[in-house]
Length: 145
Image (cartoon, rainbow, N blue to C red; front, side, top):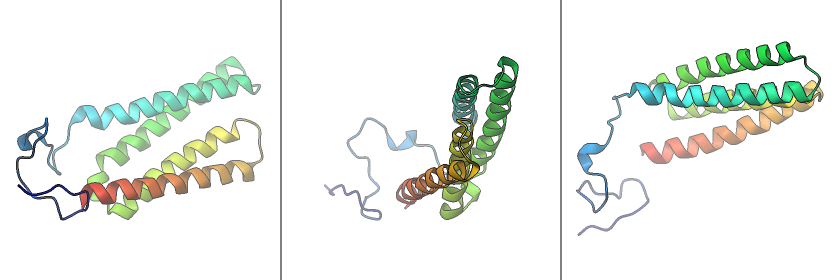
């Protein structure tokens, strides 16, 4: 019986002892409509609600806080949907940078709502974006190799 290894290229294609049979895996080109919408919508809802919370805590009116949250939710949901839908067409590096840019822009936007300088908000977004890009690259690289 071959041994299992975490290193890429060392895993032998056999029916290993596990709860998921080989035929249950989703192939590279197959897509599920639920996962294409579920992740971006969940992220957009969380971002929108947190935007509303921060806006209300920092002096925005009720209507402007909710409108700002709605716009943030719709924009992040749309961009997230495009990224999730087209992720298999991008190289690993470009995909990691795209996910990092979306996350970094979202975090920088949220930081700007707490009445800090534009430079500080941009720096926060840059740090979070770079961290997300590195983590995304690591995850994409090891899952596809």
